[in-house]
Image 1 (cartoon, rainbow, N blue to C red):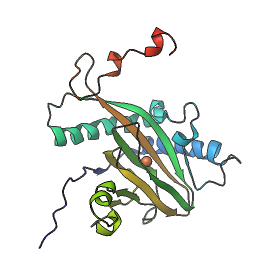
Image 2 (cartoon, rainbow, N blue to C red):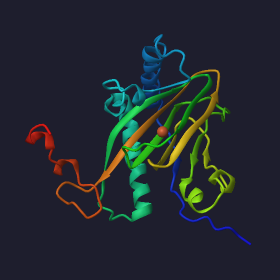
Image 3 (tube, rainbow, N blue to C red):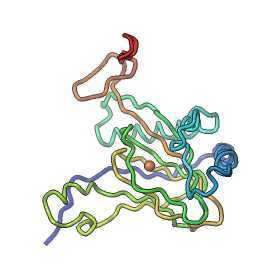
Image 4 (cartoon, rainbow, N blue to C red):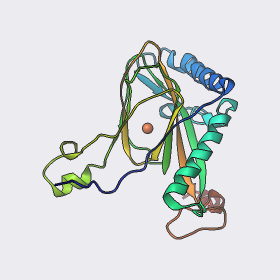
Length: 229
Ligand SMILES: [Fe+2]
């Protein structure tokens, strides 16, 4: 007897190799965030801090900084190969960075609760600074559980073969569908851990809308331009 698990979810994992300067620039940028924001008395008691969560101007726009141009470029290459693998080289889609934000995991028990990124289609995580041989603080993906709970009286966790766990490693990049539920298991380390998250949107090129695809933002017309609703 064999169980065949259908509907696989494509998650890309690649270990990148930034040169010394690029790696140092990214780490310095996150160190500054850690020092200026995380060490602020208002946030010091948190076990994680994300630029996205804070909703402060600019903290989710890390991709516009000089330090992250190298990663933007590497991400562009990896996203293209991800889409090529899934859709073939003629997919004709454009990918946009919506936002990118720093994530700091505290030394003792830094964790991020289960969530999805409802605003995006593809999301990425890149580990800027981790400790060698420290496998704590894994990224764990969870399959959608509503199918099982609708048709069988058992929760998905009891039926699932694997929780889909990815080990954190310095300069490792993970790319995954944004509606895939994920969490960070508790991190324990000598130093705080730095990573960066990206949210991406997939659209058609300008002027080339297709059924069931999101058109390019240049084809959009703000309704507010016609007066307040
Ligand atoms: Fe996330």
